[in-house]
Image 1 (cartoon, one colour):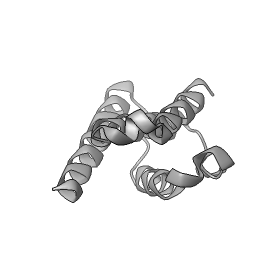
Image 2 (cartoon, helix red, strand yellow):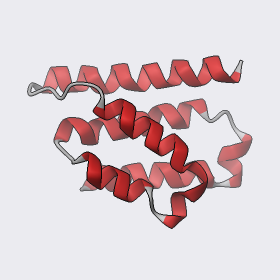
Image 3 (cartoon, helix red, strand yellow):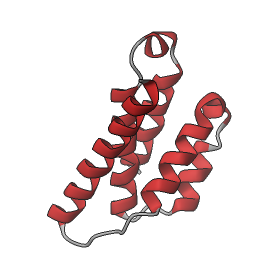
Image 4 (cartoon, helix red, strand yellow):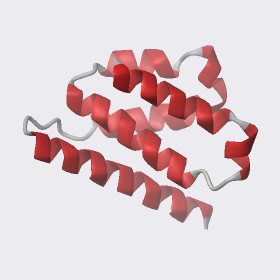
Length: 103
């Protein structure tokens, strides 16, 4: 539950004016990592979509849904090292994708 709250806070940070003036890629990468942490911890996709559907995330719901769908398309691992690698890889992949799109 703590990770879900962290994801919601990070998503909220994307909504602020200051965050919009900055490069969003690091924030998206961090949000992606938090979503993957939830996925690896066994949080249901339904719960993650429910949070992303909140009124406070209306302006970034497409980004959140994309990240959730992508995260849940990846395997869930049992060992901590594999879970940590999955989080790091997913975060890096989303950072790279964001940077390519912003070119």
